[in-house]
Amino acid sequence: MIRPDGFDGAAFGTALEGDLRIDDRARSLVASALGIGERWAFVTQVHGDRVIRATEAGRLGDADAIFTTVRGLPVAVATADCVPVVFEGAGLAAVVHVGWRGAAAGVVGAALRTIARHGLAVSRAAVGPAIGPCCYEVGPEVAERFPEFVSETGWGTTSVDLPGLVVSQIAASGGSIGTLWRSPLCTYTTPELHSYRRNRTEQRQVTVAWLPV
Image (cartoon, rainbow, N blue to C red; front, side):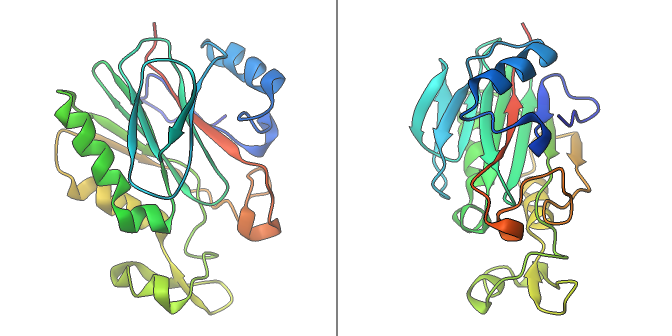
């Protein structure tokens, strides 16, 4: 697991831990290592902007962002090229799954607005490993949506800087975010990370956030 410095309850998974959505034993081992419970809150990710508040563990329905105010309740999303995000604040832990469709739908802003409507404030944001502009080849229908983030792959085709886009959306939200951490790792070029673009894997690395007890 990758633990961003300065965060109380945030861990970005790698391929080395296993697929923690479906492998109970692997999740139990990771939970023990992190000092958290092994029953986590997950969602069925649909590349939209729905945000769910988690008050218990289990499968919570269709969404791409989860937040909780329950201490000791881990919330988690799974990725294999999309961008995983963790938000922390006083009495708050949240995770967001952001692909290009979610970015276009505004899931980052939706998560932050929903959190604010519940009287909570995000003070720290961490953007985990995702496919980089070096490798995220896209067609014109995607590039046209994000002209400021159009780049070029290592093999000379059009790409989009999806992590950079997410960082920009977080920054544009304003609010009280004082710390913004970003992983330098590209899922496509890092063998220890799952990448759907690299080999069409069905496996995922899992990002988990929690409020320490």
